[in-house]
Structure formats: structure tokens, C-alpha cells
Image (cartoon, rainbow, N blue to C red):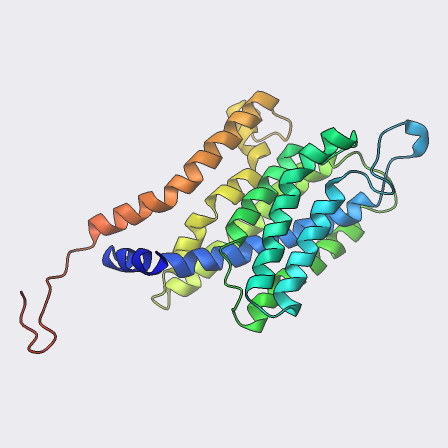
Length: 276
């Protein structure tokens, strides 16, 4: 099936789609690891017991399980033999993130907001396409990003409880999405200068996670708040649904447009070169 898909993409003049998606998947995994490391340090600052706010043991919420799973996935890509173990680690992290809302209801404990979990799921779904047999520097990128997330959290979080993710998520997620977009665009420009279109397809593949990371800004614009970080919840849900539906459809649309612009090549004899 993969071979047939590659042949059809080559025939459409879009043979760089699969390598581009793999590049986007590596960037998505690095972003997910950065956020997971940040939230892990944030989780160790629970509210005071006198407040009566339910917590998950010594942590703010049950989300700590998902964040630790992402850190293990990032480390497995670097430390464990590349291939199935690394992909299994990413799959477990995606499943753990999906299970957080259910576990929160069952155990009656807090959880991260959905606008924190949904972008993480989008990043994880894309990260499943990562090339786990890539060179060592590429496989080390998620671990380096996780260290960067921990360093960022150590500066921002401090020693005080700052409110169930709250304003931190509203500031951190759009900033992370902006950095991800900037890195992807710079890679696309650099690769295009070398006649390599992988970066362009990577930008298209990253549309959904970048949009979900910026859902506060997009929903605020819809509400007429000029990108304000506190739009109404119905607007946020509708904006997330639009981004979630439009993003996956964008890649096949771009492939179809590429095929429409690519002239068909006449078949030729491999011996004499005559066109059939």
C-alpha cells in the first residue's frame, strides 16, 4: 500500500509528500516533547491543601501521566534502538493523552483543559509518521526540545501555584505555535533553495497542530476581540472543529492541485526511447 501511494504521488509530481510529512512529524514530536516537559514541571506545583481543590496526589492533575509518557517517547527515540520501540512509545503517549479526560471523570480528579490536550493529540497523531530510523541528530531533537521546555518552565513557573494552567496556557500555546510555524517556514525556504520541496509539504502537514495551538487567537478574532485570549467557549469549540476538519483535507487538496498542474509524461520505450 505504501509503495502504491508513493507511485501515485510521484505520478502526480508530488513525490516529496511522504518525506515532507516525516519532516513535519519530527517537528511535531519535538513540539509535543517541549510542551510535555513544561507541563510536567507545572504539575509539581499543586494548590494548597487548605483550598480544598482536588489534586492527583502530589501533582496538580492526572495530566502528569500523559506528560511523562511523552517524555518517555522522546527519550525512546534517542536511546532505544530506532524502529518499533520508538513508535510504540509515541503510540502509548497518544493513548495516554486521550485517556486523561476519562481518567479524570472516573477518579474525580482534575485534568488539563481540553485546549491543552487537543493540540497535544494533534501533534501526537502527526508524530506517529516520524521516521524512527533517521540519523542521530534528528532523533535527538525531541529530547533537546524537552530540555528546552523544562528550562522554560523553571523560569516561568517559579514556586507558586498559578491556577490550573490558566493564563500560562493562553500565552504558551500561541507562542509555541508561532515558533513551530517559523521553524517550518525557514526549513521550507532553505530546502526550496536546494530544489527540495519537503519543507513546503511539511508546512501544509503542520497546519492542523499549529491552528489548534493558536485556537485562542483564532477564536478571539472570530468573536471580534482582536485576538484576545478569552473568547467564548462555543467559539473556541467551533474554531477547533473547523481547523481539525480543514487541516487533514488540505494535504490531499494540495496534491490534487499539484497533479493538475503537472503535465502528463508520454510513455517511452526503455530500449530505443521512442514514445508510445
